[in-house]
Length: 448
Ligand SMILES: Cc1cc2nc3c(=O)[nH]c(=O)nc-3n(C[C@H](O)[C@H](O)[C@H](O)COP(=O)(O)OP(=O)(O)OC[C@H]3O[C@@H](n4cnc5c(N)ncnc54)[C@H](O)[C@@H]3O)c2cc1C
Image 1 (cartoon, protein in one colour):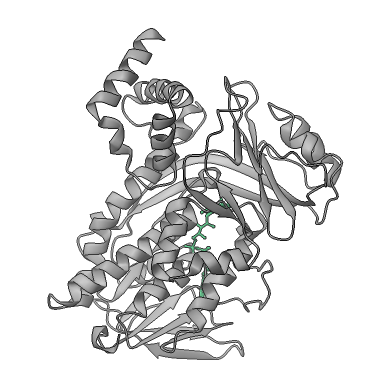
Image 2 (cartoon, rainbow, N blue to C red; image 1 turned 120 degrees about the horizontal axis):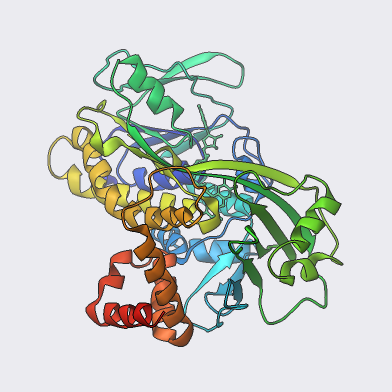
């Protein structure tokens, strides 16, 4: 691999899913990769303060599993060895939605794994740690007032180490995978540059999660359940198996209608969902943990692609660019797909001159195609009238199209497979423009 390297140092801020996957891509092309993480990273797969979302259900889409396997060959086997539960997409997962309780369950030929977020992250982290040219520095926080000595280019990062001492590390490329993107925004402010415009979809989601031991008499018809709400009962739930014969159950609602933080309140909220599947599964099950809660105000997309100038040597990635309503389970998979894109660009641009200068503008342009489908999924939140933000034009037609397509998917396994390929980000949403499919959907819409 040495001949592929461009003999430079890359620094990644944050050892979450986007930081670790980016480090995997960078290690192929950079001499040295240093990851700075503010948390102390646990050796066991346990929750940590820097990623409070890790206490909640994290679904891994098929595209995410494949992207992780592309970055870290053999990743799937690692995950299976860590106890992840294989899930046949379409068959092992019961989806309940108005009109379909449940939606037809079919084996569509592919699978993913259900596993806790800490175990996914630790499995990726182990692959990053064993790379000879990659170093993970824990307890190292990049402060908010971060700036570069030269406003036009980032040449290094100052950070506070575990002793509270400030250090500086030189870098030809700094990848901001801090989730919030605060280092990038602080850098832009420090040079007096404009901040990226932001598109937000306000949902004020409130979540609560509990982990249970899977009882011996649990249903064998499904391994996981998703219960969607209706216009009348706007609460939903997601239950997936975890390593160690456990279920993780996340339930919640929009516009602040979240579950209480005590066990009895959690069960009562589960009973208030549109169907009783989740409640019946957990009501006698042994609870293994307390109730963890989380608030997610909005999906948000930062338009770095619209900035005329951007500091050379800086690249935000993952949630720092775009974060999605977690209900759709897209964030980790998009992070891994972005890292694959980064790897391809490093390969391609490395042969074409000033790689560092062209990297961020090219990435910002090309990532738009990648974000299009997951962002269009997030815009479905406008189906709820109290969602904040700019409703896309002609959204009523989009909704009617979705209902008709769903009817076809229930009837026809080929259409079902196609819709799941789009949901799992294996195919773009544009596949729905296929003339033959379009004709069938339009006929359904006309019938309705
Ligand atoms: C409640 C909830 C549920 C979710 N469910 C799913 C799901 O089902 N499926 C899915 O794919 N995605 C899900 N997501 C999204 C997913 O967690 C993220 O999109 C994904 O992990 C990528 O995030 P990231 O790595 O960009 O940022 P983060 O996960 O936020 O990681 C950022 C890292 O940077 C570190 N850091 C931050 N600032 C600094 C600093 N200044 N200096 C040094 N280190 C720093 C943090 O400690 C952390 O380790 C969910 C999110 C939430 C909130």
